[in-house]
Image (cartoon, rainbow, N blue to C red; front, side, top):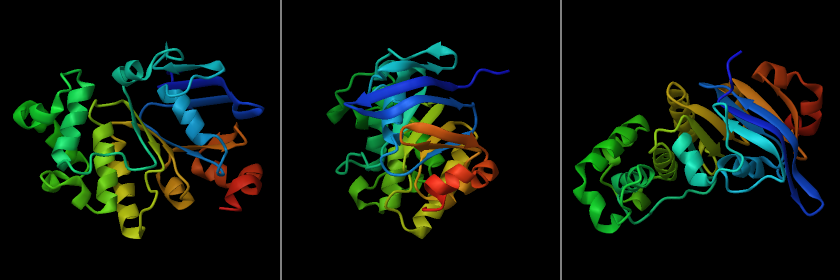
Amino acid sequence: MSVPLLAVEQLVKRFGAIKATDRVDLDINAGEIHALIGPNGAGKTTLINQIVGELQPDSGRICFDGQPITDLPIHRRTALGMGRTFQITNIFNNFKVIENVSLAVQALAGHSFRFWKNVSRRPDLKEAALHILEQVGLAGQAEKIASELAYGDQRKVGIAMAMAGDPRLLLMDEPMAGMGPEATVEMVELLRNLKGGHTLLLIEHDVDVVFSLADRISVLVYGKIMATGTPAQIRGHAGVMDAYLGEA
């Protein structure tokens, strides 16, 4: 059997008496879109924060491509091939779109971060940034100020910045948050297109999006993985229906 790209084993994180993650096991296979769903407060973002290194688990193990990374800092995990987007748009609003992505390319490549004057003079950075913007459908808006973009396009800029290091695994925290129907359709299509070159782990509350996109789904309830399976298997899981899907 092939080794999962990401393997989480018996991960525990406590906040006082509360177990935000309670002996979580989770495998993400290379090339798949894996969705993590569950009610508010289930521990989804806490789990992602442990995977990327923002939180240290109390116990358990995380491996990336067979390599233990539980104790590695964020920048080391990024260097191995992890990228992350956030629930709240996290871009430089007063910079041009291409400057935002060029900064991410510069930082993740380990170049000097004196970006206030260097980025516009670095054609290699701009070329790399433009290539990424083409992948997310924003090449035609590269010279716009980021704050002038529609909200859905600002979210795409955030994804482009996460792609700057050409990550093998993209972890996305509610990529559809705050979007209207048209922007949601565009984002779904973008994520489908990204699947060819990236493995995606996404937290998403829009169950219609999840069932249309995901190869596999894991359901987190009260810090525990209740079930993992294909969309059809999760739809037919009685416990999931009672705990989450019936309500959603």
